Image (tube, rainbow over all chains, first blue to last red):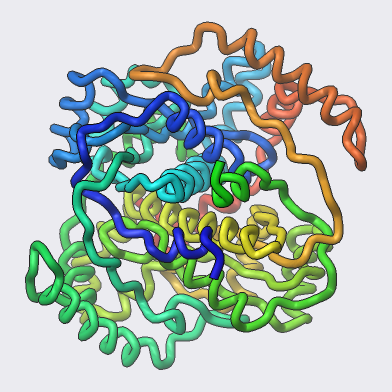
Length: 247
Length: 247
């Protein structure tokens, strides 16, 4: 196994960082790694906002409810961005571009572009001895995050990425069996229930034995609980207000 | 610079592969790398379908209009998947889960989860000496792809990933200047036009000097052309049919 695959397979989210800040060089390497990810038709439909202002970090941390949004080596916010392209066009061209830009298809393009970039950033950071945590929690109040970062139309905050020197050493969290996630030639559901039952047992044992925050739970129970309580339903109108996912 | 960062920064999409197929071991390593990516609240909301059936590959290649969808070392299709969780629930629980599952928020979660996994797969493959190409082109006829792979409700094909031994050696394609993509504390638009004009010049020179498929073009012109012609507008109703992005 090569060192890159090793880095990838050793991933676990870090939720407690040392106070040491990333250097400008480290930040630039991470951003350059993000930028080199594949991008749909070269649109590069994202902007990455680094947060250095401590008050702003505190505000974002309040939205997320997570202290590591504030306490880390560096905080990135990944935004979907079609505004950059829109601003390059004349008013006449802009009106021609509206239908495409507001489509579900381009919402997908933008979201995937930003996510590919962010995963490259994560792998690069981890290869440099840093830890990372994705922060979907910034969508707890997406309008507030958007206002804090002064995002115009055609720009949407998708998630944060906290990076820094790990101040904890958590276990690697188990994943679903490969046979559940990877199939050949068609979507098959036989054997899934049995394999997921085994995974539930494995996860119960992981939760009971891990070094902190032990509990009794299964994946199935967690997921059913989670999806029984709709969250972030304001994301839908927010996207439309920002001219995404409208038609 | 460590070898992982080097691998990431050397990425270019490969569109011509040798005929040698990936081994089962290689495929499993790539899938395991995909699975170890971060996932929102542990939902692992994706299924990866490997295509080994040559007829099926030919059909998918016809949808994409790209020969390398057929001619590669292995073809993966990344699907967003909430069906797995849905099937674990009782009928009563399922009806409780509907509002959440059909939200824009969970559409974002699913799309990001699949994209993070796919980027890990890509970096792992490249670190193993393989080349990759993302295939958003499978969304040219998303209903047909869905039918070919027998995807049920709550499962959506998002993109393909062609992997194999490179049979070409293309140049690395330039990215927007870091200062355009990376900003601090707030979204800023000053200086963007000038920086993008420089990038347009750089890209014109890249297109004129690259080893194959030379042309005269700028990023700005390409983007305005692209967004002036809506494509894949059927993706919107398709998602709703599959119970995604409905409310």
